[in-house]
Length: 448
Ligand SMILES: *[C@@H]1O[C@H](CO)[C@@H](O)[C@H](O)[C@H]1NC(C)=O
Ligand SMILES: *[C@@H]1O[C@H](CO)[C@@H](O)[C@H](O)[C@H]1NC(C)=O
Ligand SMILES: *[C@@H]1O[C@H](CO)[C@@H](O)[C@H](O)[C@H]1NC(C)=O
Ligand SMILES: *[C@@H]1O[C@H](CO)[C@@H](O)[C@H](O)[C@H]1NC(C)=O
Ligand SMILES: *[C@@H]1O[C@H](CO)[C@@H](O)[C@H](O)[C@H]1NC(C)=O
Ligand SMILES: *[C@@H]1O[C@H](CO)[C@@H](O)[C@H](O)[C@H]1NC(C)=O
Ligand SMILES: *[C@@H]1O[C@H](CO)[C@@H](O)[C@H](O)[C@H]1NC(C)=O
Ligand SMILES: *[C@@H]1O[C@H](CO)[C@@H](O)[C@H](O)[C@H]1NC(C)=O
Ligand SMILES: *[C@@H]1O[C@H](CO)[C@@H](O)[C@H](O)[C@H]1NC(C)=O
Ligand SMILES: *[C@@H]1O[C@H](CO)[C@@H](O)[C@H](O)[C@H]1NC(C)=O
Ligand SMILES: *[C@@H]1O[C@H](CO)[C@@H](O)[C@H](O)[C@H]1NC(C)=O
Ligand SMILES: *[C@@H]1O[C@H](CO)[C@@H](O)[C@H](O)[C@H]1NC(C)=O
Image (cartoon, rainbow, N blue to C red; front, side, top):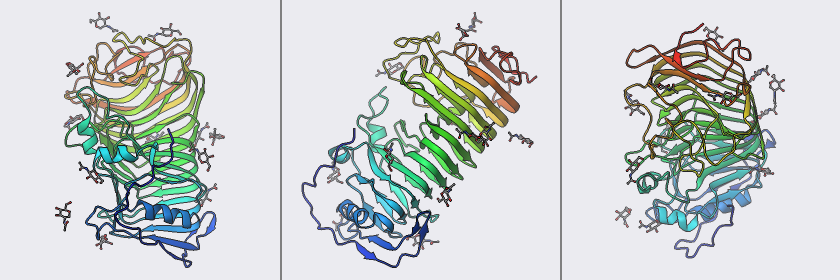
C-alpha cells in the first residue's frame, strides 16, 4: 500500500522558508534537542487555500535529529498531502496549531496513495499537543466520508489512516482528532505513553465506520486519561503486544470497546498477546465494553488480560468474548447459527488468565447495538440466538480447552428494563475455570 507521494502539480504559493534556531532547550530521552524548526503557515494569507505540507516536509527534513518541530499556537495549517518522516531521532513534534486535511474526498483521493496521512518513525519521538481546547486539533473532515458511504456499505473506499506513530521511548500528549476519516492512531514500538488524547468522531449523518482510536502493536504501552468517542474499537490490542495499560479513559458513542484482537485472521501466524490491563475506565452507550475477538481456525495465545474497575452506562455487551469473529462485509460469512463459512474450524487462539473485576452500570436493553448494522441479522447479533439484551456476560469459547482460568468478580450490571441480568456461556469448563464465578450455561446471571 505504501507508495511515494505524487509530485505537486501546481504550487500557487511558494512555501516560505522554515525558520530554524539552534537554541531549543527541550530534552528528550535521547538527549538535548538543540535545533528548532518553526513551520510557517500560508493559511491566513491565502484565505485557507494554500498547501502548507511542503513547508512541513521541509521542517521534518531539516529537524529530523535532536530537534523540536513546531506548529505554532493558534495557527492553521493545510496539510493537503501526506507527511512521512521515518528517519526521526529524538524529536519533539509540538502541535500547537490546527492541522487541516483536505476538506473533500476528491482532494484526499488525489493524494492518498499512502496508507497513513502522517507517518512518524524513529527512536524518542514525542508528539506534544496542548491542553488548550481551542487549538492543537487535527481536523480531518470525516463527515463527508461518513455521509458518502452508500446504503449498506461498510465505509467509503480508499480511506487513509490518520497517524502511524512508531517509536521507542516516546509519547503522544494531547493528541486531538476531530472527525477522523477512519482509523486514528497505529501505535508501534515500545515504551510509549499516550496521555490526554481526545478523539471525537461523533457524526451528524452517516455512521463513522472504522474510526478506531488506538490500534496497538508493541510493548510497554500506556494510554491514560483520554476521551475516545468513535465508531469502532476505542483500543484494539493486536498480535505482538505485551505490557499494555489502558487506564482512566472515557470511551463511548458507537464504540466497539476495549478490545483484544482481532486475533488469528491470518491462519498462518501465531498470534501472541500478554499482560494487558484495562483499568478504571468509563464506557458510555457503546456496543461493547470489555471485548475479546478471534477468528475460527486462527492460532495463538492471549494470556494475562484484565479488565477491572469499569463503569458502563447503556452498553449493549459489557463483557464479551467471541472466537467466531468476522469483519462485516468480508467473504467469510457468519451464519445465524453461529457457524462460519469459508474457513476451516481446525484451530483456536487460546485464552488464559482472563479477569473481569468490579464492573458496575447498565446494559442497553432499549436501543441495543449501533448504526453500523448493514446485514440481517446484524453482525453483532449473528450467532447469538435468543438474545434478550439483558446479557451482562457473553463468553463463547470455540472448544472446551480454548478458555482457561477465566475469572469474574463483583460484576454489578443491570439491564435497563430491570430484568435479571443474564449470561450466554459456551465451553468455559468448570475444570479449567474454577474461579469463573458463575455456571457456564445460558441462563440468568447468578454469581457463585
Ligand atoms: C475566503 O474564503 C471564504 C470561504 O472559503 C469565502 O467565503 C471568502 O469569500 C474568501 N475571501 C476572499 C477574500 O477570497
Ligand atoms: C488558547 O489558544 C488560543 C489560540 O491561540 C489563544 O488565543 C488563547 O489565549 C489560548 N488560551 C490559553 C489559556 O492559553
Ligand atoms: C476540494 O479540495 C481541494 C483542495 O482543498 C480544492 O482545491 C477543491 O476546489 C475542492 N473541491 C471541491 C469540489 O470542493
Ligand atoms: C517501525 O520503525 C522501525 C524503525 O524505526 C522499522 O524497522 C519498522 O519496520 C517500523 N514498523 C512499522 C510497522 O512501521
Ligand atoms: C521510557 O521512555 C521515557 C521517555 O519517554 C524515558 O524517560 C524512560 O526512561 C523510558 N523507560 C525505559 C525503561 O527505557
Ligand atoms: C508479563 O509480566 C510478568 C510480570 O511482570 C513478566 O514477568 C513477564 O515477562 C511479562 N511478559 C511479557 C511477555 O512481557
Ligand atoms: C499480568 O500483567 C500485568 C500487567 O498488565 C502485570 O502487572 C502482572 O504482573 C502480570 N501477571 C503475571 C502473572 O504475569
Ligand atoms: C443508548 O445507546 C444507544 C446506542 O448508542 C443510543 O442510540 C441511545 O440513545 C442511548 N440511550 C441513552 C439513554 O443514552
Ligand atoms: C475490585 O474492588 C475491590 C474493592 O474496591 C478492590 O479491593 C480490588 O482490588 C478490585 N479488583 C481489581 C482487580 O482491581
Ligand atoms: C440494507 O440492509 C438491510 C438489512 O439487511 C435490508 O433490509 C435493506 O433492504 C438493505 N437496503 C438496501 C438499499 O440494500
Ligand atoms: C432459543 O429459544 C428456543 C425457544 O425457547 C429454544 O427452542 C432454542 O433451543 C433456543 N436456542 C438456543 C441456542 O438456546
Ligand atoms: C465446545 O467445544 C467442543 C470441542 O471442544 C466443540 O465440539 C463444541 O462445538 C463446542 N461447543 C460450542 C457450543 O461451541
